[in-house]
Image 1 (tube, helix red, strand yellow):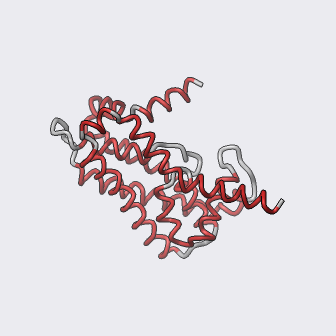
Image 2 (cartoon, rainbow, N blue to C red):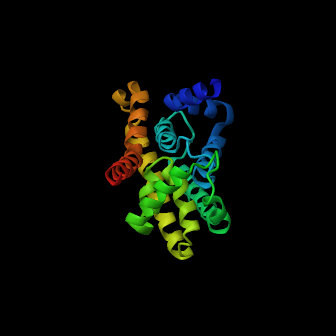
Image 3 (cartoon, helix red, strand yellow):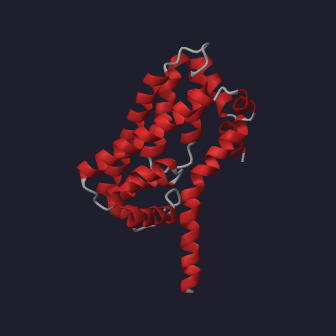
Length: 217
């Protein structure tokens, strides 16, 4: 319970926690965030890490003249982390995924795998781009792509485009808008808004699946 409370506090006050990390580790905080992004997108057992809000908050902090953070270098570092994370996840899915997919592990929920697969069935390879903006689904999408043996070159292309759009959208949104007085004063609610909006695709897919099952029954 204590860990859950800490995680909730970290997400809701992520700007304050990033400022604290910056004070302790300096510009090395860029590598810390890159590692978190890599884990969120590269490890199928860590889908709840706060990617969107964290990148947005970092952009807002980087815009402050008192910091030595270069937003452009940071953006490219995060893009590389997102790209490599998806690549690792895809490789895991491609080589050991079929075995994992047949079982319902505690840390890898079958419902998330099935939900992501439905996205692939509907949107095809574009799912790699779409799910970048959907928490949880973005963690499982490259894994499912690997399980489905998506062509390597095609995956690499969509992986790069998705990672680039995702990182640039949030880091520059934070950079240009994060320090507006209204946004700073309501940062917690802005973060919650980002999370809720990001969850819309997942909620829509879950609702559609539930209604489909109910209709069939």
